[in-house]
Length: 210
Image 1 (cartoon, one colour):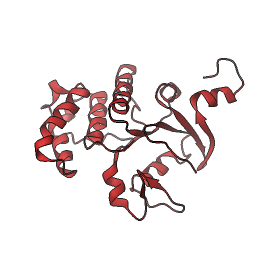
Image 2: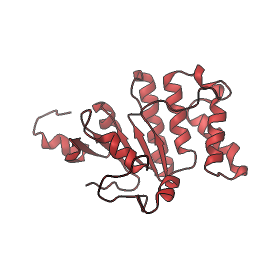
Image 3: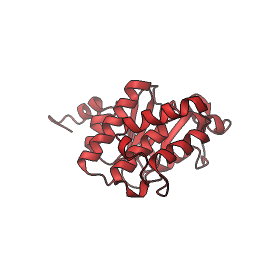
């Protein structure tokens, strides 16, 4: 059981097999819940799944952008899928490409992008329709430190500009420390620790705990 406040960056941590990605896939309506109830952006997960989907953005673990399309074309298709008003599409896409640092590569095929470039494209694609909640499943896995920090800045900027609520899974403790307001640590499908970064460090009663 957990709750995430509006405008918060919430980290879901734990070892492999703890259930983090399964929980996330349930919350984004990709997997049916085995039991229990949930509300996302105020909508019931089981009773109003279409409204949940319209209220969220989702970046899965595996790279999901279409490599045979350009960055611009990936964003345009997404804008059409989410019924963004035609008169707003060009400006939204241009803003997304600029914030991701991809303006110069906008019309290059995504299969020519680096892993960091693809990840930045996926984050702004998931934010294009300005969702109330953004789910990020290990968004910086496999990225070098420079690319990782670029993603961090992108997430922080999105939260600051739009007040978006972010739920993120990660195995990188420095990432959780840098980004998250609150953290839940899972093990075997259950939350075994929950609190702010400062509270969890203080609970260790160890000077300089990370």
